[in-house]
Amino acid sequence: MASSTLISDTQPWKDLKAHVDDIKKSHLRDLLSNEERSRSMLVEFDGILLDYSRQQATLETREKLFQLAEVASLKQKINQMYNGEHINSTENRAVLHVALRAPRDAVIQSDGKNVVSDVWNVLDKIKEFSERVRSGSWVGATGKELKDVVAIGIGGSFLGPLFVHTALQTDPEAIESAKGRQLRFLANVDPIDVAKTIRGLNPETTLVVVVSKTFTTAETMLNARTLREWIVSALGPSAVAKHMVAVSTNLALVEKFGIDPNNAFAFWDWVGGRYSVCSAVGVFPLSLQYGFSVIEKFLKGANSIDQHMYSEPFERNIPVLLGLLSVWNVSFLGYPARAILPYTQALEKLAPHIQQVSMESNGKGVSIDGVPLPFEAGEIDFGEPGTNGQHSFYQLIHQGRVIPCDFIGVVKSQQPVYLKGEVVSNHDELMSNFFAQPDALAYGKTPQQLQNENVPQHLVSHKTFLGNRPSVSILLPSLNAYNVGQLLAIYEHRIAVEGFIWGINSFDQWGVELGKSLATQVRKQLNASRTKGEPIQGFNFSTTTLITRYLQASADVPADPPTSLPQI
Ligand SMILES: O=P(O)(O)OC[C@H]1O[C@](O)(CO)[C@@H](O)[C@@H]1O
Image 1 (tube, rainbow, N blue to C red):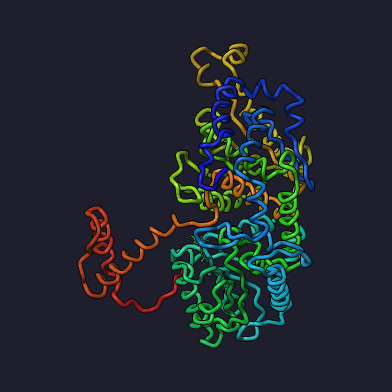
Image 2: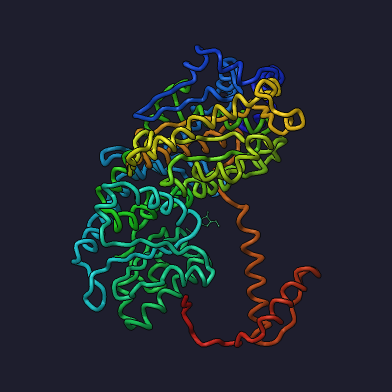
């Protein structure tokens, strides 16, 4: 396929379009009665079991998707990514988050340089520094141990680390290694978030980590200045050297801010913000909390999937299969959303993280060559852990819109509970739902079944479930640092596969810029109005009215307010 050809102009795309009618004629109820088909839709790798037999797809669909992958040059694109080619063409950057979790002796080149040695130099520095803090040999300005860490960052400099932290909080090994320590995150510029984050913390025992790839993000920098003020007002200006450290690709700005670059942990422009959890962005704050050895297992888990993605034939390649099926659901069956439904509370921050990775990566309107797409790319991701979600939005999933679901279950609970007299453990109860829901969605319930159950006629249509609603089931052996790394990499690669097929650039994010620059204009006018009484100008009637109302109603805010730190 010529590089400027849209994927939708290719024969395999057209074949899949034509195939939709055949698929829509069959019901999952019937497809699932074919055991041979179901068997061939099970894939196992390194303890993970993927079952995609509840997709509205046959073996013929799969074959056609492989033909689409072929014409989209999927294998070549994966290789280009792993070989450090500048596949993020609009920013002229390589995309090498796989290098962040490669073993020490691996060789991954970018621009003629083996980046793995740079990665391990930073990992060694993280290990050394975090051990000093954890052992109490690095202390605060008043000689007290730094037991509490606040990581300031937003978007990719927040969501991934929060997801991993939340997952590890229930892992016995991680709990043990985090005893007596606290890790908190500060993302939103809302002063309420600042107040909540520092509530109950003592600056004397707190280490603040400013995490920002660019070190220019407005929210992060304002929060960093606020917490610097919190430290300085309690301990004096010299305390910054002991209480503030940074993670960034922009060490010059780190220094300008007043943080010693020796206490900064670098990463590189070939790491996209939303793909940065395996860089110092995640590894540093998480190592402070759990110790480097726990976080190294997380990196090893991600690396296991990186190797699988690179070398496994597509028929058994978990991220490739998932990516192709997502394209099938979105672009052919017309289901634009996906629900991420982990049946473990430990993964409650998986969906928020994947929202960014997926929607910032694939929410694009043009091809990588800048040609408007004649189809809609990207997926709307949302989710909640089961069973909570069942009591929230599952009604819509069962009887309203068709939303392909990812069910994620864990064989061994990290915190099993067995109550005397109960028939099943709490974990069995949870997993009963994990096994039941996909079949409820797939089979549904027919009017005939309801009539056989003597349901009154006027309720039959209300109680009917059409079924034929697709899902995948992913079963993990347990949930520890290693498995969390595997799961992260599966989603990262699946999203890349979707983008490679759609022929878009999954690694830039120009769509976040417009709102940011408009906010700058508003900020300037708020300032000019408050300090010089200038009228609001240059906006439409609606925006002018809203801003003016805001200014009038908050007129008691002094033009040059005294410094105050939020307190709740
Ligand atoms: O790490 P930084 O540079 O502060 O950026 C934070 C986030 O902001 C974004 O640019 C979106 O606004 C994300 O892509 C990024 O993860």
